Amino acid sequence: MREVRVSIAVITMILVSIGIIMIYSSSGVYAWQELGNSTYFLERHLMFLVVGFAGMITVMSIDYRDLRAIIKPLLLFSIFLLILVLIPHIGKSSFGARRWFKIGPFSFQPSELVKLVFLIYVADFLARKQNKISDFNKGFLPLILLMGIICLLIVKQPDLGNSVLIASITLLMMFLAGAKIWHIALLAVLASPILYYLVANVPYRLARIVAFMDPWQDAQGVGFQLSQSQIALGSGGLGGLGLGKSVQKLFYLPAAHTDFILSIIGEERGLIGTLVVVALFMAFVWQGARIAKRTQDPFGYYLSIGIVSMIGLQALVNIGVSIGALPTKGLPLPFISYGGSALIFQMMAVGLLLNISRTEDR
Image (cartoon, one colour):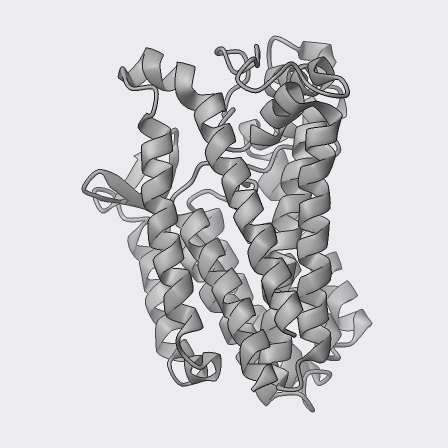
């Protein structure tokens, strides 16, 4: 599988390189206006990237199967961090959300750690319970209850997007492991009123749904972000306005260097540039699926599926939000969007995927 590993590494490096270029392009003016340093976000992103590469190399240097011995205490520690971040004066509050720990000049988001750690735990659980996963009480329910606790803590931050993502990855892995469809369907039915309550009774979430239905109905209000995103994508045409020539990044499109960086790519590099990014993620998922298909170790099989699902679903949601096909979720575009914790753990996830492939070859 060496050629598959090389292709995944190359795809990741290309996406990371696109991210470096577009973060500077999309944030330079804003950073200069607000912080007096046009390279502020670029410098921080590069530091996060260095940490991410270090983490990636670290997880590649060990036998991934050794993680099974420490995953339970690591998961407990991660859940403890989720609880700790909700405590005032410990967790950092920003724009009404308490999701980060402030560590010097940097912030750490424990939900990103939990996302990867829980994924590893699910892979270990499914490998241990292969013959019991179809049993509701012994295989399905224990994992769902643990998932529910984690998602509840993340929703309390509040962060519904990551909760839905974690639940989706978990259910997909369980389905592929042999969970009964009617068990998953029953869970979906029971969870639907809760999801409705979480959306309908929180004004900003409800506003996002309204904006998603028709952003142009109130383009200067709740639909502002989505309408500006669509303007950016439409303005780019086929070949784009040119690198660095985006108009929407000039204080029109909020979160231009984070959640809506794809819109700036579309404006500056056009439909061609956007399709290149989409094709790269599709290639990543395809090659990752090839690793999963060839992996004989059950733990490695489920772990590779989880990693590919995490990267693929997050990219799909971000792209869907940018083009107006999905309501705004607040999930960054993997490897490309500006971000600290998310980028670091995404790089480590890729390291694990490469580790699985290399170990299988041995």
